Image 1 (cartoon, rainbow, N blue to C red):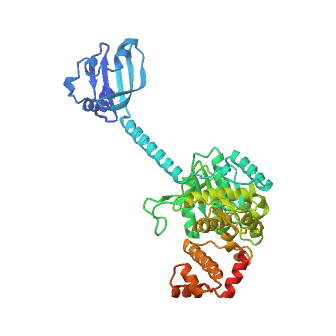
Image 2 (cartoon, rainbow, N blue to C red; image 1 turned 30 degrees about the vertical axis):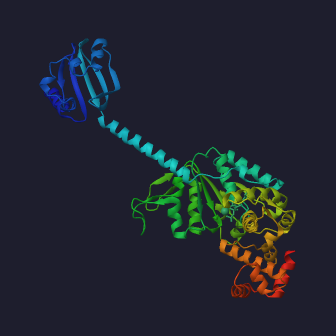
Image 3 (cartoon, rainbow, N blue to C red; image 1 turned 180 degrees about the horizontal axis):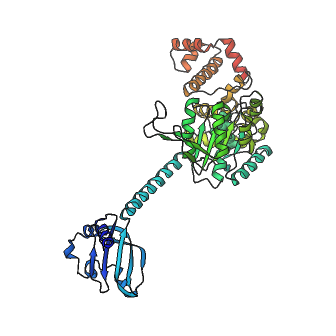
Length: 464
Ligand SMILES: Nc1ncnc2c1ncn2[C@@H]1O[C@H](COP(=O)(O)OP(=O)(O)OP(=O)(O)O)[C@@H](O)[C@H]1O
Ligand SMILES: [Mg+2]
């Protein structure tokens, strides 16, 4: 019959599957080219031979015993993984043999590729996680004042609702980023990435690519192969949009669309990408005022402000100072490998009167300077004297500058010179002797620091 010849030819020639037929005694009556290739045999070595001699593990022998088909089993011949089916051939109610075919050989190759890729993906996930993981928990937020405790408990609630968008507002240095980390760490997303994007630090024209990624060739300078955006990297985790008040109107609109749709398109692509991320935004700006000035979109504000945290400034929780000082001294000493572990009552008194416009970050800087100066003095306690710069700077309301080591050393040098000059009643030769320095060098320093006897005496009085 023409049709059966056509089918037979097709079966013989096809490379999409291995096929063979055995009779009711298990003798091979047909085998196709692909199967022969895989077995590495010639047709005459197989035809009219028992299948049990060729592939002893075949399931077709059980089919001719039971008369029942076996569909979709995995098996391996000569290292080729295959999915096979064996079907009984029945004619007029009588079992005549078995037809077997093994298909999708390369599905296993595909599976291997997928397995490899999954492995790689997990590796990259781990890497992303190690680079982009949250570093702080609620335990790192020091404070017992009622206003900070309230914020911590509200933030805890946010942590329990892993999809709620959170807006954190507070003055510079109050701990907004710390709170964002802590929320992520306490949520079920903690094993996934925590990615911070500083909206103020990235030029407007690059922010979109940074957040949403781009396809190859989508703009001049675009990297070959394109780039994954931060939203995609954060998939499953949290994206922290810091300094959101600095976002341009265009980006505000794009962010709004993302928050509404929960999907976006990479630059240069029209394929929507869906991600599951929690958005935490932070700003030290008064967004309500910015809305009034039409600098911030009201609709975006409401999308972001699902749960709002207002972090209190340090001067509104000044009772927390001793706790914070203790905690920060430990941390800074660890960093600087110093052993200045205490603060005198006088110094504590001084810092309690200050109004801390730069909040905890400023306190950190002040303590760092204090530790360096105390250490240079061979002292394990920060005294009021080591914080002399606060006294001077506090004349300019609320300003304590952050200094480099060079500046700190210079400050210290000035302080020592002032002290010895006073002790020697402004006798330069004696001063140079005591400090074992060249007289001409001392003159230079006196000139550089403006240490006239008048100034010296004034500053000493201040330091008492
Ligand atoms: N309650 C706190 N307990 C311990 N450390 C704190 C606390 N608040 C802030 N800090 C520390 O102060 C520094 C500033 O905190 P953070 O960066 O979170 O502030 P911020 O509000 O994001 O500041 P900015 O507005 O300048 O970005 C960090 O080193 C942080 O660890
Ligand atoms: Mg910050």
